[in-house]
Length: 443
Ligand code: ADP
Ligand code: MG
Image 1 (cartoon, protein in one colour):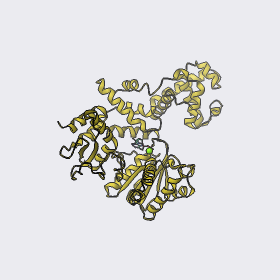
Image 2 (cartoon, protein in one colour):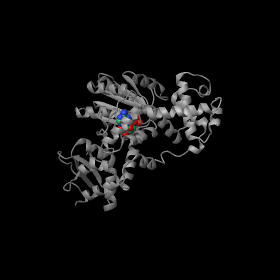
Image 3 (cartoon, protein in one colour):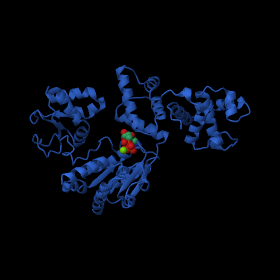
Image 4 (cartoon, protein in one colour):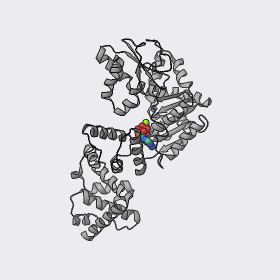
């Protein structure tokens, strides 16, 4: 076995198995071109090459260093391309960001196929697809905004991946990277190279543009980049956690330009969408879990889909370690920490406040005699959760909710238990609230 191969085997121990199979296992070490201070691996396609380069070249270099005491420059090249010469300073495959200037660094898993569409993201999704059909024409810029983990980066990169396969040159960059590139080229008096990178692409995607806030000089530079690209009908895509108008410390001329194309928001996913996303992630990562486990995970996560992969890989790892099936019981045990058992400290007030926030009613209405449908619903849910989570007796609950006596409480409990048996969606909603409260998500 060559040293390169043994490094890859070692890497296997340190990364998720799925990643290993999908990316690392596809690499071959190129003995002819490698030297002590230069290690070349060949990848079968650009997607794998770019993924390994971004995510693992530093780690691979480190493993080499541990083994040989020399930290080599790690290069990932395409198999069918002739390897670049060792030490070639202009090699675009080097680990150093300086040399990877023209790599778009897209995550190959962020495709449209892997994206779950629900009412919360339908609009942004359609906009992204239109951009693929008519880049630079349909919506320019496309500005996608929404909370953390709602799939903005995924959607933007799906456009990037699609357009890249259509032969477009795509630059994907964080604001941080843009700022770093800018200051470095300014310092080195190589601004022509900076402009070459950011103004000569077909598609420029900048992630989390809100971080431009307060960066006056970079905003100025970005303004000119934007103008140049847009005048040439090159597609610009931006993401942010806020609407352009809401970004403080951003020049007005940028704010207005960000609205020139299309501003699309992504909302928090509904429960069904969360379930569908988990299903999708299971499929992609080849994790086999049952419906009850999937439903359970959907109810304990917040709206942030980013947690899902962590949870799945944790479950997968534990199940392998203990040689066990991933049952609901097992899942609850493994994720116990995730759901800190804070039940003892929860009061009826906490529960009512939480339910009100989730169901959009006022706490005062819950304790009133108001009989409108949504309030009755919220009241019942509150009573049920208060009864199952807190130690309060039925008379105590009756007093809190302003009822004559405890028979109303027991009547409500009976009603809810019937609903739980007959209505799957209702059960999911109750489970969700219950788990969120247990997970300490009270307001
Ligand atoms: P954001 O950029 O909005 O913070 P990301 O795009 O990084 O969120 O998404 C976080 C994780 O959740 C990623 O693994 C992404 O694939 C996944 N994700 C989010 N929304 C969806 C969706 N609608 N379908 C499939 N996966 C999603
Ligand atoms: Mg993001």
